[in-house]
Length: 267
Ligand SMILES: [Zn+2]
Ligand SMILES: [Zn+2]
Image (tube, rainbow, N blue to C red; front, side, top):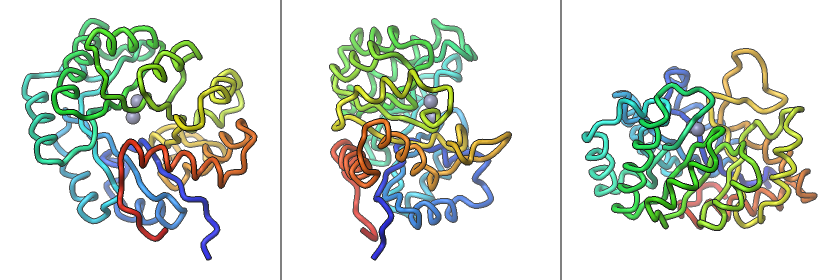
């Protein structure tokens, strides 16, 4: 009887302090909104991150966990972080390595440290057989170069896509899925919507990147984003593709399930 389209949020930082007060309720709201699974990238540089996600995944089997050291913290990457990824992977506690990548906009870590952290974590992803969750901001060509340099063939997701078509095509050629966030709903994102129209349907995903980047109409100063809002990005993506929302939801959810098979609940 439920007419809500069945969606997946392929990227939500539910480990963040913004969710300390209502983490399980946030997942319940998402489930009620038709969000069948949520992939949460954990931050190995923050002690509270993985335990918060592990507790959530215990309660909700369709909360999936990744782990890595983000481009912003790349300068803090230590051998112990790589050991933790291997250990978590060995115990089946994570489904992907990430998010990892490059960010030349914020530049919180020196570019060389970012590149090294990305390469080292891609190597661990290859070693453990896990896909990678990649972040790229103004760094598309270098992301492609890192994947090629490591001969990384494990695929994964290029998340919160904001790069150009050349980067999209290169990453599609390398087996990656491309995930769009609430940025796609922003009035000024016309060029991004043009790229979104060209990506093969079988490689598209949607995400919130919660608590950041709330989509229109939830966008606003300091407004927290949450997985239940992923439908707004899906709605815009469906419009861009000339598809009914239900068809776009079905395709993106099936894409995610191909990459990360997850248990169906309430469907
Ligand atoms: Zn990111
Ligand atoms: Zn993120």
